[in-house]
Amino acid sequence: MTTSPKIKTLISGRGLLGIFVLLLLLAVSVPGATSADATAANASRSSSSSSSDGNANVNALDRLHAGLFLNYDKHLQPLDKGEPATVSMALTINFIDIDEMNGKMSTHCWLNIRWMDERRTWQPQEYENITAIHLHASEIWTPQIKLFNAAGEDESYMVDTQAILTHEGQFLWVPPAVYTAYCNLNMINWPYDEQTCKLKIGSWGVSHINADYDKSDKGLDYDAAMQSTEWQIIKGSTQFVSQDYYSYLEYTLTVQRRSNMYTAIIYTPASCFVILALSAFWLPPHMGGEKIMINGLLMIVVASFLMYFAQLLPVLANKTPLVVVFYSATLLLLSISTIVEVAVLYLSTAKHKRRVPDCLKKLLHGKLGSWLLLSHFSSEAEQQKDKSKEMDEQLYDNADYDPSETLDINPTEVPTSRAIQFEWSLLATAVDRVTFLAFSLTFLILAIVCRV
Image (cartoon, rainbow, N blue to C red; front, side, top):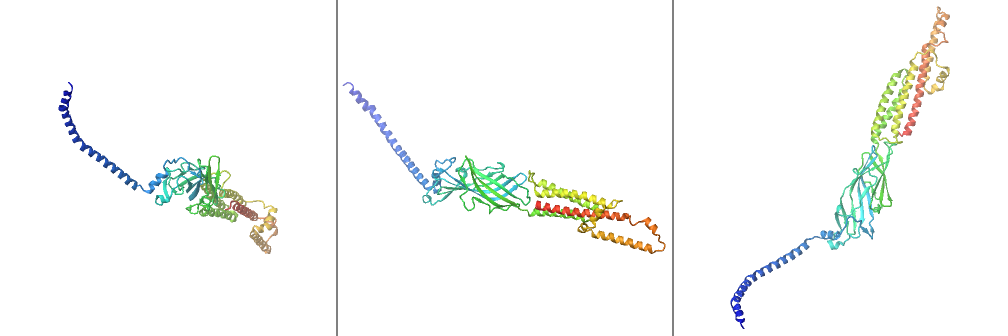
């Protein structure tokens, strides 16, 4: 009973003041809370509106790309029917060249590479009828194609280009490449030679690779290749080689050299050398100095050609070009010809005191002399003999002529020095003609063997 007046006093005094303050705060705070709620609601509506507008702005290509490559690992080989995809490859050659000095073949080409991925398919009608898309090679799995018999990493390279993916899950990648491979050259028939070189193209990590996607040309096309100034592809073939951990395609190319220019540079001078060397044998025997000079000039020119071949052609064991063999043999024959001409010059110009042996005289005045066209020399000798007889008859008709004195001065049994010299000149001419026939036969055999 004593506490109730205190409670009433507290409620009636301080309680009224607290209630008034509370009502004032409620009057001030309620409108602010209503404004914040409205602002939050407006923000929520605007965000939902912008989200719906963003979904409307995403095109079909972006949605297709995002759907195809979600959780895609470009380091894993794709699957086709549950097995690692088979890579089909074809080679299109654009240009080819051969470096004879280093034994290398450079090929500018395109690689037509195809493979399937069963997880990268879609329905075109769901994406605005898109049937194919372009992808950069760096964002998809690509087979690591290498040239197994490459001459060097710096000389062989492949350019990364875009690939095409169809709605059926087929990838097509056509990168250009420059391949430089070692080639076992055979220069025996140079410059009419044919070279067979091989390109071994494959992948160390892909064991399923073939060239069967184009049955018409076996995965090799060179018909549209740019014509080289020196080489022409005449034959090509493809072979699949499978090993334990890798496989590759072996492209075999047979190329032929274009030799029109070499005919004018090499074979026409060779013909001139042969003609000049043989014509020197038909000069008179006493013109041995001129013959030796002709042979000397020819030897210098032939040696110059051999030096040119040494700079132009590689040094190959057991495969010396036949044209080099021909020029070397020509140089040797010219040396022998010079020695023969020195001997002929000596026979025709030296002061001989003895006559030609009778066995040689019979040959020179017999059938051999006729075959060597020496008959006109014999006729000259007979004419001189007839003239000497006429002079003797004139001396006999002279009254003051003493036969004993004539026999003492120039007996008929003893030939004059001029007759002896004529016999040796005739022998020198025969040596020239026989050497001409021997050299002609030798040059003919050389031309057949060396195919000049």
